[in-house]
Each structure stands twice: as C-alpha cells, then as structure tokens.
Picture 1 (cartoon, rainbow, N blue to C red):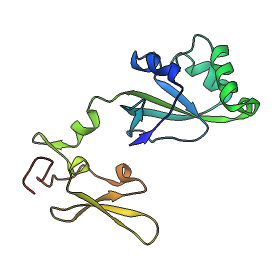
Picture 2 (cartoon, helix red, strand yellow; picture 1 turned 45 degrees about the vertical axis):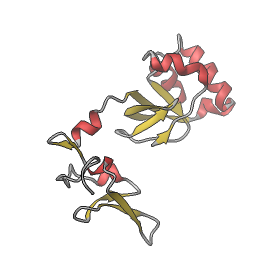
Picture 3 (cartoon, rainbow, N blue to C red; picture 1 turned 180 degrees about the horizontal axis):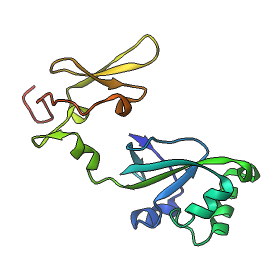
Picture 4 (cartoon, helix red, strand yellow; picture 1 turned 45 degrees about the horizontal axis):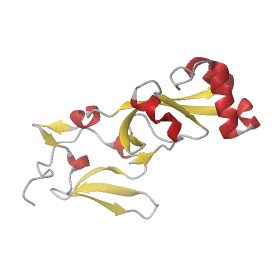
Length: 163
C-alpha cells in the first residue's frame, strides 16, 4: 500500500473529514488506489493537476484551510517560493470503507487481489505479472495492475480456504 505522509497537525482534520485533499508536486497515487495516511487506509477518489492559483482558490476548504491565503502560505512554507508558478497534483481521498473490495468480490469471497495465493513473476523489462496459484491465471502487471485487470472470475481459493 502506498503511503502519503503529512505533518501530524493534520491528523484530526483528516480523521474528522475536514481535510479530504492533499496537494503534491508529483502524483502519489492513482484514482482507486488504497493509500495509507497516518497508518489508516484511504481511497483516492480523484486526482487532478491544477496551476497554483486555481488550486488554492478551488480546493482550500477540502484541504482543511479557512481561506485561500492560509492555504497559499502553507504551500509556500512546504515548497518555497517556486510553488507560485507550479502545477500541483491534487489528490482527493476518503476513508476506506471496502468499496473497492466489494467490487472485486463474488459469493462473499475475496477476489484474487487479496488472496494469499497471489504471486508475481518478474519480467525482463522490469515489469512483472501477478498470477493466481489456482489456475495460473494472469491478473495484471506491476506497473498498473488495477488499470489492466478486468473484474476477474474468482479462483475460489481465497484466504481461509484449504491450500
């Protein structure tokens, strides 16, 4: 699971749902990824690239700030004066509540993505592929596993089954 780190002063804002977005100079996760923020899972629901001025005006409340000016000062403190001319990635997230898992479930059983029978094989190009031990069915690739996977037919060998 990818981690998005933040200053500890944001814990309460995030846990209360008042901070549901974070701006970064590079992409930290894709839409649909489950990320760890302060060791708790969150689902990334949106990611956009904004020029600084637009980001500050449109997202300051979702970032947990009281005004665009307050948000602007915080970004300058983190990234320095160069932030004013930058394009920034804005990641929107919410508490993870199992929605992604629910979409990848069949008959109440976890899909291969959360199965302990999942394994991967490195490829010569630096990419690798995910397979399920039960049937050796290709499920995706290291580079973009969620982008390549179709909702799979379940292997019927999920955590808790006889191996």
